[in-house]
Image (cartoon, rainbow, N blue to C red; front, side, top):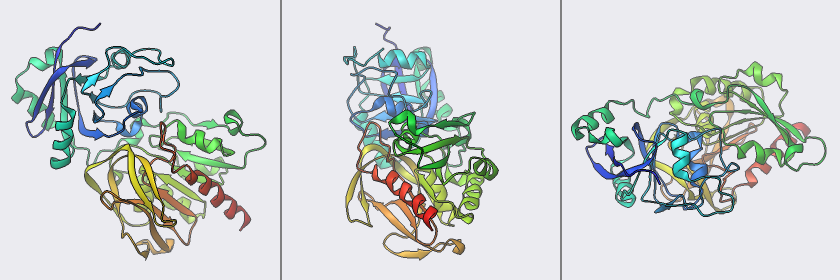
Length: 384
């Protein structure tokens, strides 16, 4: 049993929540956001899109199933800090290898427990995501005014360029034969890792696609070198306004007529490549229970999301892209909570994207069909 040390969650507006230390001791800064998933905390912690963010879990009980070695969505925990109400005293699950507290300590993640996360969430919904800090152990004994100043002095998430910090250092290949596919690959995909989750190339490989995962700094020549039938841009952290390099790369892809699919950050980059703007949401969408309308089918999907920025495009009409050479564009999906753009569909070029996560580990799986749509798009291009 670890020692009980005091801890503080300090927000930039001067709000302070007291609790006790969870995980590593020390101080960490980041943007405070809330995640509404009732399960899948291990996937949340290891999602690179949470880089430089302090995650507040709205579910009250965290850590019940411990930590295993099969479910991480990347090579490490990326959250800057972790806020929970009731941390499990001991894990209880046959797949558990260690407690969440032990994992946070091992990866030097500073957390806080015993916090009224409902109150924190309601505050962030009203005031918006904001700069924050977690201070535990000796760091929590410093004057509060000094801690608030430190929180306020950190860089804003707006204008942050983070994809290059979380991407893979070396390209690698995910083979369909390793994920249950029988026979030769159906197609080859070049996937740009802007913060890609492990399950994303796996979902493509299960459908017979050989996936070359490339670093965020890859050039169009790097993409051409793998002779792809399609290009994919992943989720990732940061402000899409800083992704000029990737926007330029995607325009080369679109100009070459290569089929394209993007999710999350990739959706925002497609929006900017088409000439639309992006903007920061007040508190974002984070969780595995976000309702989205598919305007093509009229169906509602429950989706997994993690984003603080969105595309500024007109919902409910077909429009010509501001970059007119790309032709007509539709907002294919929108949020039923606040009307935010949740997907784009190009009508004159082979390209589409969604703002959410169709790979959705630990679920839901309503949107898995989008990978099939990508396969069909590449087949159509091959038969054209």
